[in-house]
Image (cartoon, rainbow, N blue to C red; front, side, top):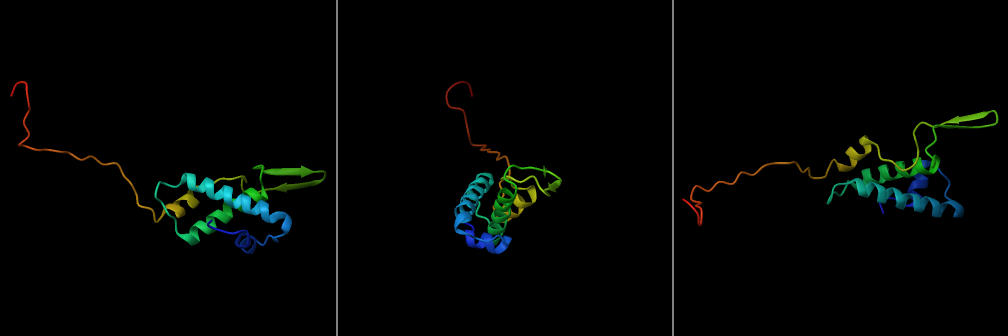
Length: 122
């Protein structure tokens, strides 16, 4: 696991209680699985970057699980900065994959002037 519930609480200022520890741990597990599915095979991100992004992704899901932009209860309206839920921004994904080897497409041309046809016309 890239981050623990204690690290989450320390970095987000959320009080860790008996009631929310399991939820925060589950969010961290879900967020890490989601992030891991986006990483290229064999990519192992920097530990500090992985922890920071994991906590940020889990925090969005914890703060705004329904992905709301705003909500109103009576005379009180609340707006959210981001869309919530589990998502990884392009910037976060770029930070996670910065140390990963890049794989590009390339062509290898094979040529052997000594190669001859076997059978058929020459």
